[in-house]
Length: 393
Image (cartoon, rainbow, N blue to C red):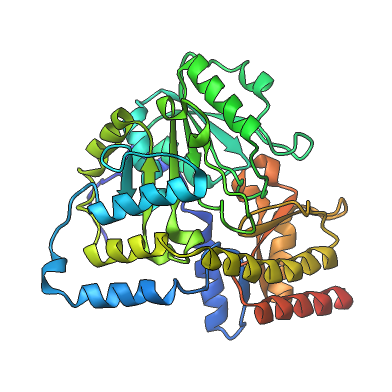
């Protein structure tokens, strides 16, 4: 259609690209429509349901007429209290549910709320490489200047504080950290958390710890807020997406001191209108699940992890068996061109999709990532397809 209009998008749109998985999943859907039957081991979206009584709570509460109105921007008391009790029980962190936590419609949304609350255009933000791509894209959307800090296998996927100290820290206002780390599965120590808090206080840098994987293949969940005085300078994001199989429900939380929470609330209250009350009541139920829930989750992912390790071994990829979290991160052999090349070869020839590490940063270029969000039979089928592909080469 011909037009004389000269509409242009906002400049911030030119700073970011469409999310990799958004494009790749479209391609996979097209291949499946052509009958290819791709096995996807890419996205970290749990394929398991929430606990039965969580679903029953949602169903029951959705049938109550008065539950369909707008709710408070700060969430209902039942949910705030449940988050506070969960943190006390699981992380040994004491919280005031009235002003030290804020329920969110997902951690991804929280990344935007926090960035808008703390970063002016031109402010510096520390982003890990490799790391969750949304830290970078959201920082670009708010006009911040990005300073990447390197996480490397030689450095055990931990921040090099000597390297970071050489950056212009007087202009850096915020630092993103994430342990157990995605994509590498590196677990944090109490020593690391203490050092991050000391660093933040020394340089007036807000430390934001994104903590959605602490219960996956991990019997010692940790919170950065367990460090004395951490709430003065740190914010923690947590989520029910992975720990309770509620990714599509969009339930998360931001936790910090009352001042920081009030600033985040200013942004949030102008962006969304609160969550559906039955979802919040069901989430409160999820947070009160007994220890057996977490033990069963550990068992399920342990069984899947064994098969994922077999896939890595079949591909001659090296991996650290100490990894925690929802994925398995592996280094490709020296004779393979790149992780992206290997990912494409598996997709088009073995009909198996694994995530290439380059999407998490330049330090991930020689790695691939396998998601554990697939039934054991699918993982086994993927392994057999890869064996057939390799033998045909």
